[in-house]
Image (tube, rainbow, N blue to C red; front, side, top):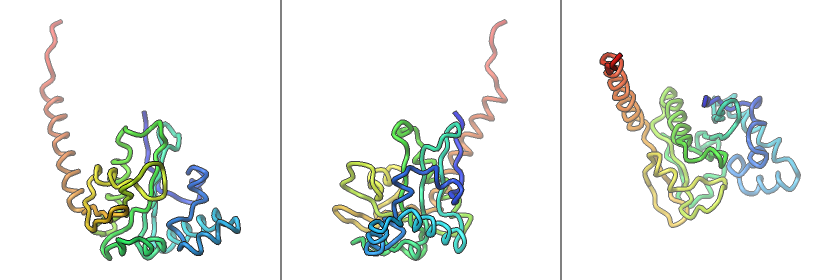
Length: 205
């Protein structure tokens, strides 16, 4: 099973689920967002937001493909590009962090570690761009797929709570910790695989 994580662009935006292509929950403030939906302009506003962030800041998402089938995506950007963030009771996002806005994985592909891989890919991208952390607002009462990620999932992939709230805690993932953990795992695997390759088991002829 081959899997790829590709930067999100206007070219592969159609690979996102229909409802996500027309969702501007994070991209616009509540008033403008509702107005865009009423006017039937949500899709155009989404495209305009992605285009602006790509031009001004750079990559702001990843699309996950398994055997060339799009099965998930993740969106992230500095808080200055995320108007809805200021409406949360645990805002603001820290100035040294990028906000993990939302993400989604097709039901048949959940539970296979793709969520962790997506977060690690975002972390690697942001480390190259010299950011210190990723922050996200979690939904502590999450019951079904929505624009706000479940807090339990964020905790499971390494985030820590930095501001508590009964519904929308703010969580943080320190990128230096993530990098050292990832490198430790990769080095351990290299040693293990190296040992296996150097000392193959002998089998009777």
